[in-house]
Amino acid sequence: MTKISGIFAASMSVLNNDLSLNAKKTIQHAGQLIDQGCHGTVIFGSTGQSQLIPISEKIDLLNNLANSKYQDKHIIGTGLNSLGETINFMKIAISLNLNKFLIMPPAYYSYGDSQVLDFYSRIINSVPDCKIILYNFEKLCGYKFTLNCVEALVNKFPEQVIGVKDSSNNLYENLKIKNFSIFPGSEIRLLKGLELGCSGIITATCNVTAELSRQVYDDFFSGKKQTLNNKLCEVRSTFDKYDLISSLHTYCAQNDNIYKNILPPLSLLNQNDKEELLNRLKDLEFYNKPTLAA
Image (cartoon, rainbow, N blue to C red; front, side):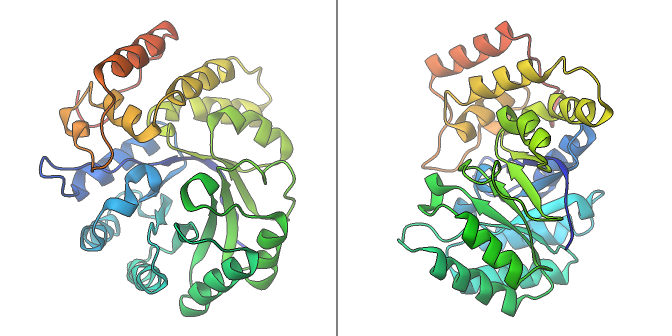
């Protein structure tokens, strides 16, 4: 089993004015997050608007990502309901030496553990060279992983099912599997998770908290006194007051207008919420490093 550890951003997708995906700038954005402290990123997670981006544009990005500076540090989100499209997309990624995936069960339909086991079994039997991080986020897909389901998947596919992103917060405190990566989905649970033996975090707001999050992570393992964790948690709590994708695009657009581009039905924050967000972050003396533009 391959264990992955560290600070991972659910990286934002960068769109052109016509709302097509800008592959070059999306990869550049992810690379800059690594330069700022992330151990890696998830490309095409929910923060990257994966479910709204055409497959053809995703494949174009994969072709560019395969030749990028940090090619081996990226996890690919599938963001697809269709089993067949998920498998085909993964096969293309693996042909480009991109074999780590974040996969959520399909949205909309109601199902339980046995159906989830079947879903992932069919994926892995079709794409045995993959490494999968399960995406546990009931709010988005309607299903919440149980301890038993995760354990059953790992027992059945120990070489392929290597971790879980726990955005539903029902696993990270109680799941104990040797050499298995567990990532809470918020900076608020980073330090507690590390104390419990978790592997780090995968979060949306690491698009702006990469440096702070990495410092908390490094201070934990070096045994230093935590001086930044409270600020990190307060910044995350501030973003949590709004839709995360909307607030991140609104915030990053202060440095580069390209981040104003967002796919419907998503939108930027309204003016009142925007001013409130920026003022709260200013009160916290939080000033993020620019992403694409100075």
